[in-house]
Image 1 (cartoon, rainbow, N blue to C red):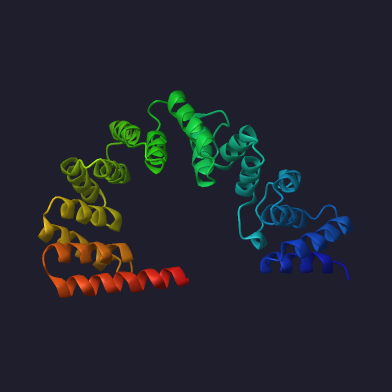
Image 2 (spheres, one colour):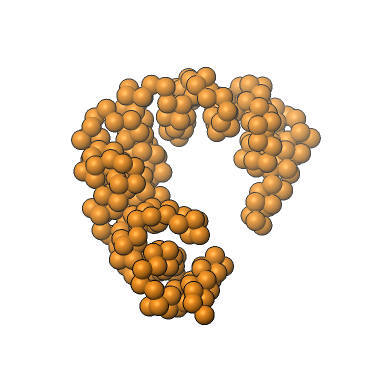
Length: 277
C-alpha cells in the first residue's frame, strides 16, 4: 500500500523503536525520494539511535520542522555537528536558528551554551571566551563562564566572571544568586548574604536564593532567620528534599529535636520518592 512504510516508520519513531523506524523510513524514501517528512524523521531516528554522522546529511536536506517529529530538527542538526566535533558548522547552525550571523559573538555564545549542555566543557569555555572577546558587553557570556568555572570548582575564576556579568547586566537576578553560591563555597558568608538579598529583591519567585540564604544564615549561626528563609522556600516548593534537610539541620542546631527529626524524615522520604521516579 502506498505510504504504508512511512506511516509504520513514523509510528515506530513515536514509540522510540529507532532501528525499526530507520528500516521503514528508508523504504519510504526509496519509494518517494521527495518525502521531506520521511527524510527528517529518518535523520532524527539516526540521531536518537546513536548515529549522528548518518543523521547530518539527511537533516541538512530538510530545514523545516514537521509536527510529527516533536522536536526542532535544526536544533538536532546542531547537536549532531557537536557530537561529530564539527564545531564550526554547529555554530553556523545555531546562528541560523536564532537569526544571527554564524560568526557573531551571539552565535559563539549560543554554541557555548549547547556545548556545555552536551558536556563538551573545554570547547564551551573556548567559545564563551570568544563571545566575550568579540563583544565585551554581550550579556550572559561572563555568566556562562562563571557557571562553567563554578561547576569545575574553579571558584575564584567564577567569582570574577559573575562580577564581570553584573557590571554589564546589573539587574540579572541569577548572576547575584550564582555569585552568592561562589562566595558561600569560600566561606564569604557576609558577601553571600548581601548579594542573595539583591537576587531576591530582583526575583522573588525562585526558590534557589531562599534555600541558599537559609544555608548561609545557618552557617552564620543566625538560626531563626535561616528557618524563616527555608520555611518560605518550603511554602513555594513543598517537595524539595534539600529545603527540608536544611530545615532539619537548622532545627537541630536550635535544639528543637522533634522538629529536626520530622524535617529530616520528610527530606528522606521526598528524596526516595524522587529516586524511585
